[in-house]
Image 1 (cartoon, helix red, strand yellow):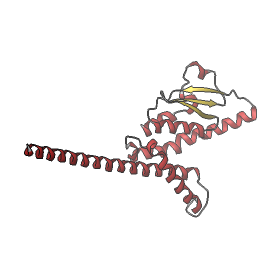
Image 2 (cartoon, rainbow, N blue to C red):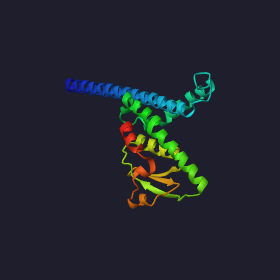
Image 3 (cartoon, one colour):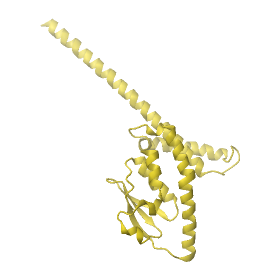
Length: 207
């Protein structure tokens, strides 16, 4: 009877030890993922900050010391808060190719689209030719990062503003300064009328 009890205790001890080791490994792995997510998100935010504050000084190339220090602090805070959005379950954004594509997107399609939108809005302000309204688009983006990038790209482009999101379908509701009649022929409205090819570029980057 005692021998049986001793064997049972040994088995329970081994089982508990095995569970403890497994939990320790999983927690360690989870902590490593969170740290990687924090670092990646912080770097990403800092790059965006640098792009938005170019020409703020001459201390370090085209930035000031104060701007860089504030950017680092702000990026670290944002990186901590948003780490689960930027890097959720997959570490796909650690792929340097995606970073290169992101830079190409910002310098190329996004910059060109923003420049065109500036001229268009200026023209409509001068002439008064506007037809404002809220339209719905379905970009078919699956990740939180992808839909966040698109919503921000649309908001940063003059003449359009992301006002709401359908969280089930990831559809966006956009306030548009000049709703075109041909765009209303199909519902949801085709993304090309609102954001050109932003959604296709973001799909390559974030999904």
